[in-house]
Image (cartoon, rainbow, N blue to C red; front, top):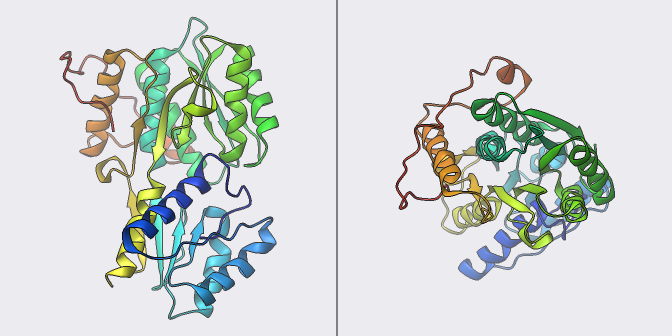
Length: 317
């Protein structure tokens, strides 16, 4: 596995991929090694080293796209996996996630849990496509259940700056937001620091992974991406010779994304409403936006009355 510059310990994206590699090692008896990239100049040397010494170099993140295109062309007989971006080559499995779907559910939850100030926040890392999908999906979810709630949006332009993540989150809390959805890699750790500093009633919706350990009592829920399972899946395809290049795009219907790890402060009724939206997205009845244009043309869908009132309703997954 080759990380992006946020590296291991980001409590997020790279750590999830690493978990998948370790899970695959346990399941298939392979050896999983991680090469951490200190800066972007490391991407090509690290991928080249991985290609020379392993069966499946796994490039962790959109930022490695160009490096994968270059190295995969040099090692035509080697299989590659790229997470969160696409390189069109027969030997590259490009795994994308429909972040907008999990983020839409996060927006539904945030809209229904917004406080008296009627504001919620979003803190992004860099506005690359996967993060933009989080942002616009979240906004569309909020619009669908709480059209009166304003979404404050800030970008750090950095995936590796928890200090800035904290500042941006504090600014949104101070403007009246009670919930911040952070899709910012290591930067997002700062959102939990901000919520802890503000105290009771201030929440973070995590992205990619359950991060409740970063601020017990302050994670409302997590818009998770099953990056770990995707790594296990593609390693399995290499092991049993079913590997194929091309795009695998994983959404709610594929168990690729979803809303998990609810706080006990989220009422069952809200969770049931989220599930109603998850079902509508999985069936294709509701299509969340993926960029600014599709957000501009998105027609909010109100399913708040459609949720089952039964206590045995299944949690959103």
